[in-house]
Image (cartoon, rainbow, N blue to C red; front, side, top):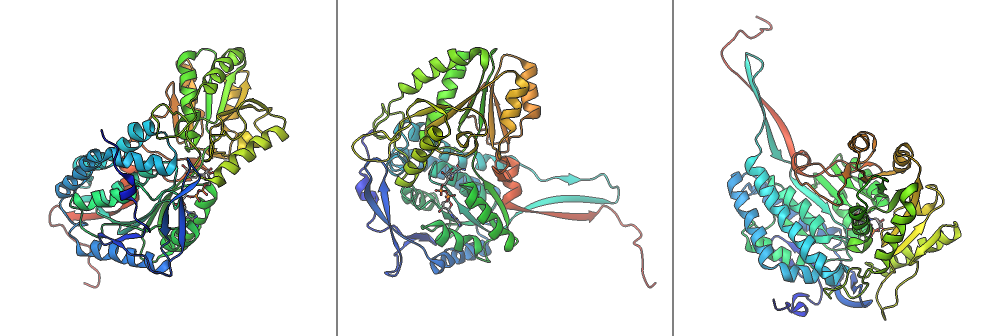
Length: 499
Ligand code: TXE
């Protein structure tokens, strides 16, 4: 397939998408540079939406919600639009993947094979979900039928991060609109590019104008204005834990419902009785796919002492063989980090590792590719789970290794974390697998498999990895108001006052 001409896809200044149109940014708007992480060069300009621009987008969403042509449309009509969005995303998949890679540095094979497919699947999933899910009816009481309706909440404020812009933003957008809400999406200011074609796709698929609006800009400016806007009823956020606290507090102040999906420091436990070939493959994938920038990365590799040396030899050899390079090349497995700031942060953790006496087994420095934000795939052997490289989310190609004696110790190290997003367990023992499922304090436990997202099941974190869940019924819970309606089944004597 011929590569799309991306230069024509990027306007001089990227504004907001309100009521079905790109809104020309006012001359007073702050201009922010959009950087290419592969070269460190500017590739675009973002005109930041201020509080007024955010209010205009929220107003468009509210008007469309009140009009009722989407919010009260028959489920089959909404389903048909969602399916058309999926189809158009598939038709324009190459363009979406190229823009995702250009803006994030995610290797093109992963943008094509994982991100864009998942983004299209998000619309398909919610199309099917609304078509098949039914409301409950309670008929246990002989006098009444009581039914539960799920009605859209209203206007959703959706805040997405930069590490998987399309996949994570569309999970929120698809969930919000499938249930009849309108929304305002704020992608990360670092990664506006794939949303240029996405907004056109929503329009071309027949989604009424104003159902999805988009504002661009920094968190403390555009994001904060969106969360604080009194006409935003529900907030869904994926990002860092520190930001999650701010958003939870702001949403709480406005009594808005909120879900936050935050950071992780997930344990990847490899027991001596595991299939080590698969466990090595998975440890590389869990630590280094998506350039290591994913909340569910397996960044604490816990190895049973009896197999630790053998496992590490094989693991390190594979990590050293990872192909670091320009993400647009199909041979590349590790692209650049998202930003100069993230490169500095990850480099800082290599310094911390050295200062704390952790042993750098491979990597540990920026990778010199003549520009851009590249960092070498890095593995460190930590001295204890107390070290910062075991406690803090680094968010780069950086895995910390610890050893354990027995399964009790593995579970206790895994749970000794302020985070609780996912855990990986590799074992040949059903009893150990079941114990892991019982005792790990994480929102997801992957047994003998890495990185599987079941959209029907809840996803989210325990502890400081977030509040709430999305997926299937959990997204419905977030994006709908439950209403109980009781109807008498027959005439019966009512209690009478003042008779
Ligand atoms: O994320 P932020 P940052 C973690 C990861 C990373 C760290 C910092 O450890 O190193 O967070 O990354 C918007 N009100 N994750 O600072 O700021 C922001 O504009 C409203 C984990 O880049 O959380 C962007 O759209 N919105 C993670 C989004 O929040 C605000 C993904 C996420 O950015 C805001 C990303 C505010 N006050 C980072 N401040 C994951 N869970 O996958 C910021 N934003």
